[in-house]
Length: 90
Image 1 (cartoon, rainbow, N blue to C red):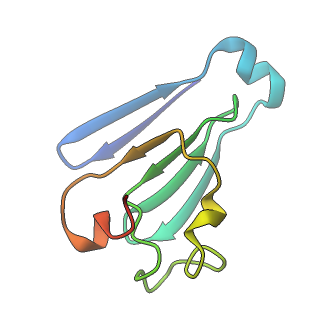
Image 2 (cartoon, rainbow, N blue to C red; image 1 turned 90 degrees about the vertical axis):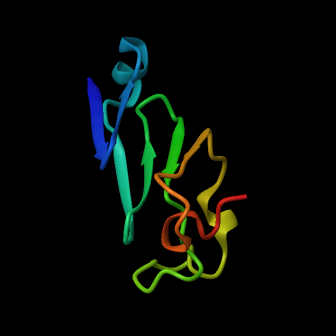
């Protein structure tokens, strides 16, 4: 299974190994508003894209007040350096 996301000028392709797919069989996608997403692969890897959480008007609780609620992030992607995309990136 492959997941492809278009981010304007770039393309991200994430593939999970076959053994990871068999373990849980699903990819979880969370939308934080604006361009913010959290993707959890079938193998348990977490990707966060454009982490503007604390200032984002549509960010759901508990992420709006506690970005540690994201848990371990394996890959952080920022599409460009505007505050509404890079806001809570380290």
